[in-house]
Image (cartoon, rainbow, N blue to C red; front, side, top):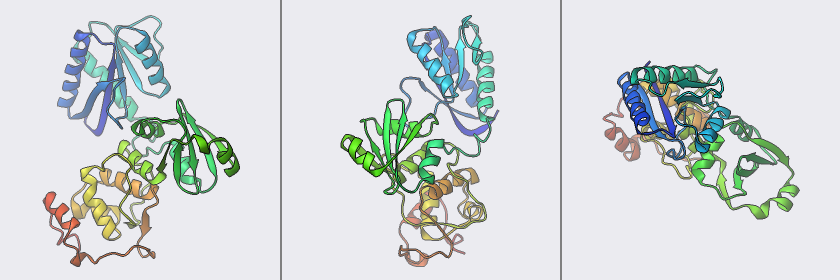
Length: 319
């Protein structure tokens, strides 16, 4: 198993022995060129999407973690089988060796990778709703999150103060309830409860960074130009996105030609192009633009500095 996708393995309620074997199994998979990171179930870094949960002795915390993982479609392995474990949970003997544990983890991660469309498109259903609705208001509810979407203004209003990284992570999931609202209903029942507001554009970019796959369909034969530098509310854009975004800001590119010009992977550029399209910043080649551009041969600044940083020469890019 060799994969360019980053897999995240979370754990909870593992004693020292099982935790050590888990880390050894992760190292074994890394030796097979699998991109894999580990974290605690209750404390994942911002924007990490967990692919596999490994649990040990059953406690209230691990029981809740297993239930939550199975509801979200996250694969689960228990080290130390229990007779009442559901069939969806893979149980291993408490004394399982590193080789067997690594093999089981590999199988569970490969199963997750083969889910329909999971490796080609990562647009969550709630994001589809936000991007496809152009007017009115919607009340969006998921767990503790209550958000009103103002589709005309392209803004999201939080009705309960929650950490922004958790909002971004929640948008990538699918269990949201949507209730259409009239403008009058929003003003009368919800406007006074708004505690924070975010641009939909910034949320889309942060979701695009958080998702390992493109969040929109990307046509390979359509030149795309970036209308303006993207707004990102809290997260920094990945360093490897800076050069392609700068090129797209200068003029329109078809994805294959840009990939060849800057020696970038198609997979990474698909994520960039998808973010540009989903955020509404895409401009097709030849379309009128309200943004003024400086000709490339008069622009020795950002593009050239980025090119030098990546060891590239822009002389062949502009040909």
